[in-house]
Length: 223
Image 1: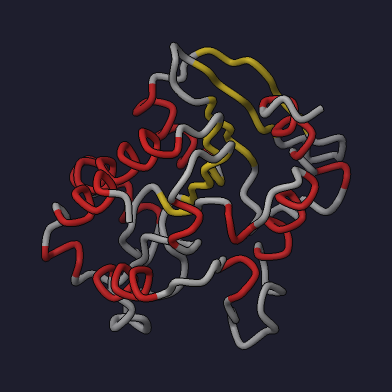
Image 2: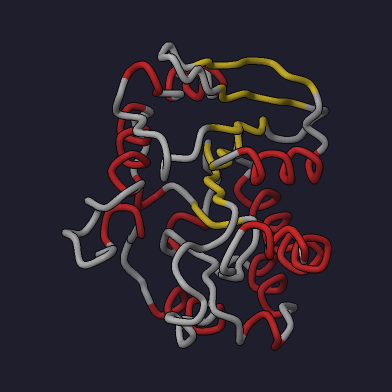
C-alpha cells in the first residue's frame, strides 16, 4: 500500500474504525498507480444495525489481505443475487465498460466511510465525518492524480466540489425523458474535474435516455 494512503488510514479514530461501514470498493491494485477516474459514493449502503460486524476496521483489514484485483461492483454478491447483478452494480459496470475502464482497476470508495440509517442522519454529522474521512481521499487524489472524480448523486457531488474547489461548470447532461434529471461536470484550478451524476441506485444508466456516460467520456477526453 502507498505510504501516504496508509498514513491517512492509520489516523482514523477508533470510534470510526469500529463503526459499521466500508472504505474500499476495489482492491489494492486499483490504488497503486495514476488512474483517470476515482469513483465516490456518498456512504455505504445497507443497514448499520444488521451489519454491525461489518466495520470500517474489518474492511481495511480485508483490503490489506486481498492481493488479487477485485471490485465490489462485479465480484460481490449483493442481496443473494449473482455477483455483479444487483441494483447499481451492472449500471456502474456498464459505464466503466463504455469508458474502456476495468472495474477491478478503477479506484472506488465513499466520501464518508460510516454506514448510516438515513442521509438525514449523515448530514447531521457531516462536518465531523468529513473532517475525519477526507484526508484519506486527499491522499488517494495526490497519489493517483485522477483526471476526474465520479460522484454518485447530488450530495456526494456537492460535498466533493467544495473540498476540491471545483466551482465552474464545464459540461452537463440532461436526460431526454420526461423526468429530465441532470448530471454535471465542474472544474476549478489545477484539481480534478468533479462529475456529479445521477445515482445509479435510482437511475438505470443502461437506458440511453438516462445515460451520463458520454458526458463523462468528454471530460476524460475519450471522445
